Image 1 (spheres, one colour):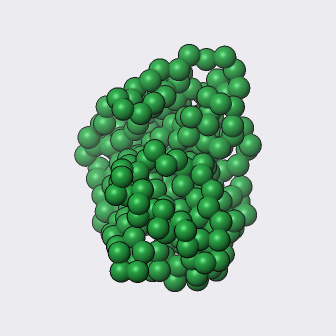
Image 2: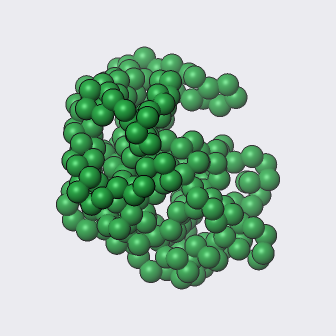
Image 3: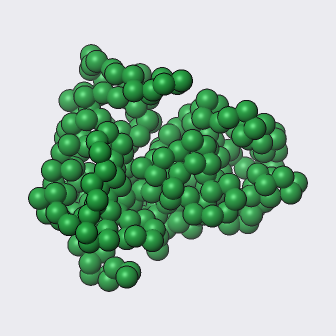
Length: 262
């Protein structure tokens, strides 16, 4: 059952509290000497004390305020709730950027109503930017966000975080699309999606993503007027191969390239 506007505002207010708490937990660790664990198998997958402290702070607040809600986070076991609502948390999306001192990371907070994420926050406490979306609207620090019109891939700026996220077939498909774009840039993690919502990037194509990598970003992109789906045009909320576009017409073209129709 969809949340009422009143209930959505209540949860959004609480999500801001989660962002505040996670930011306080993370900031002592950024641009400081810190130990880094590798939880990856084939690829380096770092986790820091900042990741762990931020997720723990958010989980404690959720369990105290909304004990019936589920929690899906990157660093700890999932909690099955009974309310039908699930908080989806990535305490530091962009940990590789974090450990190299680059501010291209953020805390991702989403609320999923059992059908889709209905609100999302990307909080960057170092730059003091907070991107918020509710599928109908999106803001950064209270200022409305709007994607830019770009109906042609030939005029588009394309981004992806790293070539390592693609398998061999996906990389071939990505390269075929990237060759059509005016400009292609690597890097960005969640920050790139917020730049798309802000009208500075036109398309992001990625793969190997988890639900906590994407769910907070979906309401931000969609609330700003963009589209975010799987490579086949289905919901992006489960992760995997994902494409986001600021212009729905561009999204339709990119889906054709990804599906081999072009």
